[in-house]
Length: 284
Image (cartoon, rainbow, N blue to C red; front, side):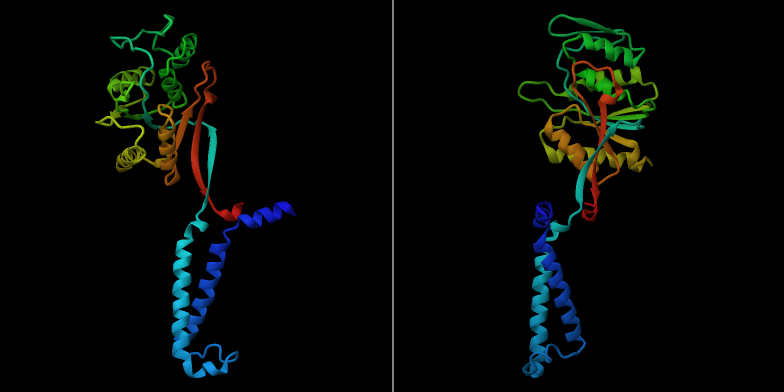
């Protein structure tokens, strides 16, 4: 009984009562406009004042209507987060993170990556899985997450890179996009093209991030691509990029993926896909 009462308390009563009021006054107004006498069975004195009564009902209807508009958010669909192991996608939008250790120069394979403690891992560039595992011996190179995010997409055809602007302490990833392109093409020869946003994006600017992602999706769609074939990798940012990626999926069929940052990686299921889904409140 207590749970039932708690559920009733959570219902949008203001919105519900406003709907009822709008429906009733709307019905009365329709009768009045058709010339039918209103309320004379209850109040015979109103027989000679039907124009005034209709006008009062009109005011009540308008008040109910605008109050309903004010409470419209009460009836917005419920949102939930769908999570599942990432499936292969043909098109990837990648928010690139700045490398946390210096990249080798020249950036060619075999590639030797050295962490801050002097430990070195050699990537031969032949097997994505083998090189991901080889990086487990280092004290965390964050571009290993980029490689993890590529692994589920065995038939990836197109990548669009978004690079970050400089912060107070870190050089923006915008200036490392050529190395990221080389990394992607090395392991996934199926990738026909790697596009890049032509300016650094402030990853703390939510509106700019959302607009950039939306613009890329529209570019893909104009080329005949389907939203369900597009996935957004938001691993390369903090909270704001994650929220931006979720916000984009709310209105579209695209999904976003996040790669767990566990120091040791040995399972492709660590790459999770997410989608913010709208469903009717009636299904609760």
